[in-house]
Image (spheres, rainbow, N blue to C red):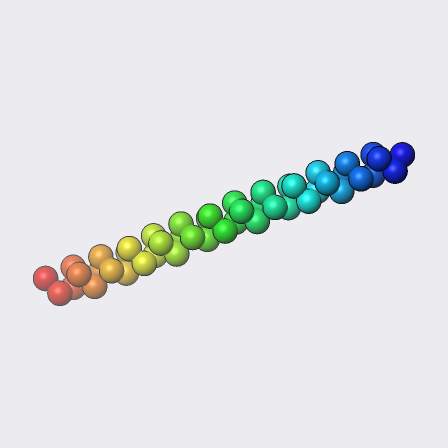
Length: 47
């Protein structure tokens, strides 16, 4: 019984770490695309 509980906690920890990695990647991509968009707008505004 205790072993099942341990496995459940381990599974939750793995799911949480995977989720945080995915969220970090999504945030990074969003920031990157926003930066590219802003730079493009600035460059287009100069020409």
